[in-house]
Length: 185
Image (cartoon, rainbow, N blue to C red; front, side):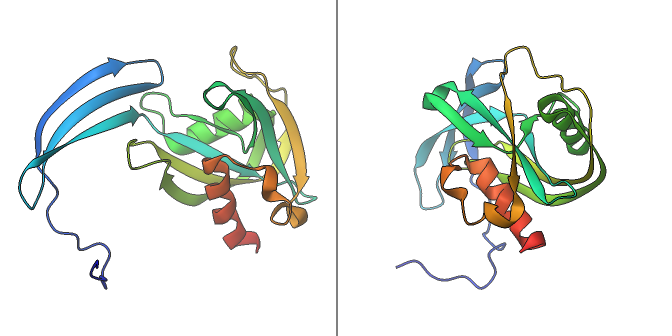
């Protein structure tokens, strides 16, 4: 049985990395294989997907509608309903990326931005850190999607969102909506 801890941040020393090698470098991710020393002795191999990080935005208009995009996601072989999101460019600050991605994907500018926090997409094998933002005071401008994106913009009433969320299966969207729920109830 696992001992219950009173302080979740007091986990002791981190495992030592015995060896590390990059086995793949791509446009979006890289794959690294690490050998780590275990505290009870011996070693273990860990495969790590490296990602530069991303942003996800909950854009809420004056009528309390939330903006989503529906887009094809090849790894899952289908279309997903997601909050607007996108990767950080090298050296880009999360807030700047959020503003850029909201304009590119949905064609919106926001007067007010609030950080909702951050989370890891899948820390068992990836280091991708996602920064969530609330965008309010919205103004429509021309969108400018990436050349390889085909997006359908959908507005959904915030008051119904938490009741009708069955169609949302994207983890970053679900996590950001949970953070948004803390603000809007």
